Length: 350
Image (cartoon, rainbow, N blue to C red; front, side, top):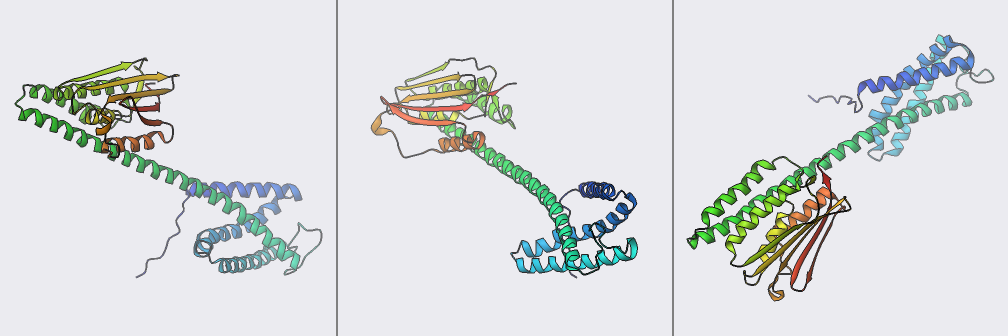
């Protein structure tokens, strides 16, 4: 058995009652004052609104979905015209037999049913009501759809952002475990230190930043320093300097945003994985922008210009999702130094 379609009210039912109640009150007061006869205005408006309301909902829930949304404009026009004719017949007959034999008291002379002017006047009046009701309804629907689409877009961005952030974790730990494996092959006594520092990094990733959009910048700096200490155990000769030129106590940043830049410096910097020099500069500009700059030396002939790691790709995607176009990400080469400059809007603690 085929299930009948039910009318779905996309706008809350109470809003429908508010609209029709206010519209009725406005017309009642208007025509009551015009004729100085509120009794007549009440009766005529009750009659008219008993026809207005079915016509409006027939148009919104039947004619528009079936014909306008399917580009069948001729059928829509025909259906609307027939509906107006039915309304005209009902209004004229009911006005004549229930309210007054003068079917159009608003005019300057007495009109008989089916006179052209009376037909046009009634149809224009119904189209006027249709236009107002439909405009209000469709505007509310548009606002609701806009909010729904915005929520969907934000939810998609959150899902993608979480996906990108989750990609960072296995990528980072994969690299660190490779370092640990290399040290274990050498039977290095540095292995216990690496394990301890790695556990601290895992604690930060698994617990400290779980479910957070922004974290204190100082925590991220500490995280980076722990990572650097692990990498220093692997390199024979490495120099890393971190310069913080501003007060960053209240500054917050997205978690794990800078670690990929540091990883990139260790991965591609130095000369044959030795004699690596890295410099990190962090400062606040004009109280509104955070500048994060990282430099690493490299041999120009050995630097992979075309190969892009997953870390930097994800960093750029996260920046786009979080800050839209309100950030700058630049990289350049100067005097055998590869330089990445990132500037993002400041997110303060308060």
